[in-house]
Length: 79
Image 1 (cartoon, rainbow, N blue to C red):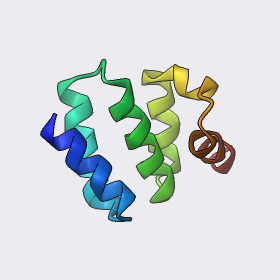
Image 2 (tube, rainbow, N blue to C red):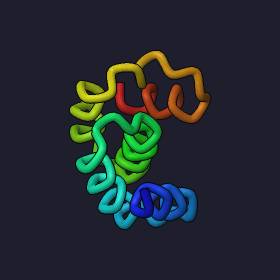
Image 3 (tube, rainbow, N blue to C red):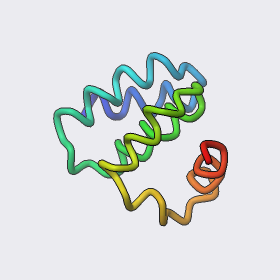
């Protein structure tokens, strides 16, 4: 869980590429960690990795229905 928390902190600090690296690894270790998937999605969109963010929606389809304003805005951004 350490990589997950560090990735979330890095994302919030705007260090998106570092966050993506940690969150990718954390998601690989635990595919059931939906919170990690959400933060990875947000970091990918924020860093302009549109195609990878779209692919991630296949792994975490519930993101399409997420009610968080941050996730909703990210989904609009990659349409």
